[in-house]
Image (cartoon, rainbow, N blue to C red; front, top):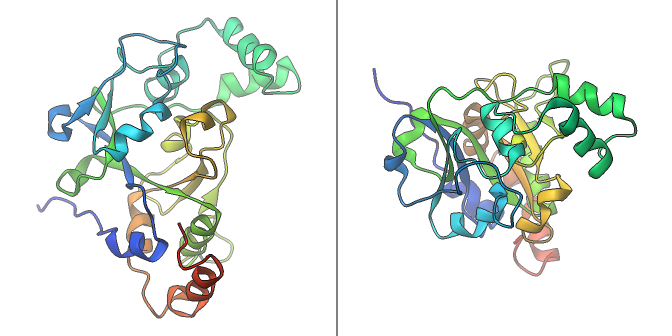
Length: 249
């Protein structure tokens, strides 16, 4: 049985004038296959640098962030990606509701804490970094870092094969920025996308104006097969690029 192939994102990246690398979330048994690696300190932390998105510049350098249930950076990431609870339930609810003001009432915050899903890794290692086509068997999601114009193009692309009456392929869920990279997808085998980078607490780790458009591998495949017969070849991008001074970036 042949290994799964990762679609070539180069043509799509060129059409969008992307200047930042496309990032994959991998769940794999061997982290060394993703070298060069960078790792957070062991245990939870609130210090500067603990947030997953403070590794954005490291991804640009070609490095991959290696996370485990023992080394995950901030507590929110540990909970979202590994189900590790670093706070007692009542303390966690009060922190999110009172300290961070994320819900109108403690009851609403408690409902979210008690029901929000978390990711359940298949292996001990979650890796976040530049795409590794040869490791596509372990790929869970793919994230494009985009501005408003690029986001619009990808959103159109996500609906290109959408049938009326079926669930919308694009959602904008509430959650930590790290959770938006994989947790909202109920079925990673379905063509779905999430608009992320919307967690205000992690926005300082990203350049201004940049959002995340995270897709499952099946939707990535659909996006990468968009051709000149689709909206990409109908003049929209040319006019938009001209209006932006020659580039979408």
